[in-house]
Figure 1: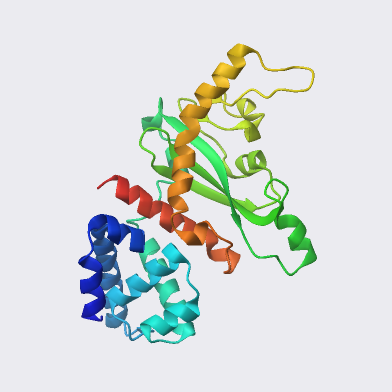
Figure 2: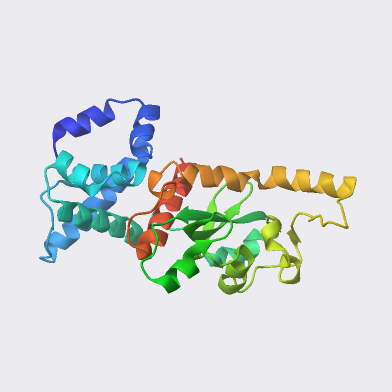
Length: 281
């Protein structure tokens, strides 16, 4: 690794370091340790190292990609390697971090755990804009009527108290929020209180311990009590909006996604795992 890059990065204060790379110094060092172990295992097995970059430079490159979503051409120029090597390096780093398990999410088993009885979870769908699909059928499947764009919808479960992200699922942009829930969540322990927005009308039939806002209609305006309930519920659900905002500090999740769609969920889970790990520091 170029010692100069490491020294310049760690000479920054904690706030500046996180602004540059999206993670705290402690998390960066933990990632560096994970990647060093993974690289050593590949070396012992005689596998290819794929790149001349040191572990530190590979991590700097990947975090810059996720944080700023720079083009691979720019990263190739800055790090002195080819565009194809940039792509290989990013994929390798992401795969190594995911396989280690340190940045894994609790998963859907948490929705069935008796230990979580009495806790409050929040569910919401975050839509990420993607490039226009080339096939006509896919254009229809990925077009979101809500966003008026081609999107991928990511359903996020989070703990309302700790802000820990529990699990994620993805569907094409045209799929309704509640349908994603019905097709991806088989069961939730009855003791969990579930907060959702108005897109989850009908949730009470699947999980009785749910809270969703009242919807007005042309002939049935909301009462004052219903308005008060909606405001109170919104103030409790704001935690999921804060989580979405933290996810979107990584520009790869806040601007139009240029890559192949099949790795979007992997990157989403990695970023969510990083945010969860940050909560434990």
